Image (tube, rainbow, N blue to C red):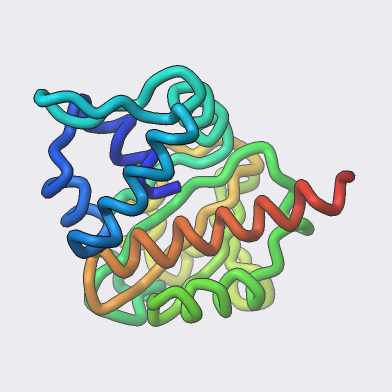
Length: 185
């Protein structure tokens, strides 16, 4: 998921730059690119790597649901050096379990995660705070600048490195969305 996001953001991109953005070593990035290429998601040329066909469609579908990761400087919601925010649209908050997604983030290398909801111009941290602006105006306005819509979920991911924050958050969201899709069928 993170590779598709980065490929969508940077067109074309070198293997080395993609590797550094998503935190994979040489062998792992070659394996990933081989799989993406065999599945017709990317094209690889001397100018770099870019999404194509199914990859462009997949990116559009993901972007309808997920925005980010956005690097954010937070105080109250931060539990480590680096923090990123993902905005999740069109998914009912009941489908995302705050502790479950936090556990997935930790499993994939993050330090912690907080799932918030945006309703009626308030950012709520379920079971903790009903209005983030009252607890931390800095965090509220920092997150609000990301362009929230009514009903959005906001996943704040903390980690010791920016790459770890991005990767663990993207992996946790991808697995959660996959589980939601499986329950539909």
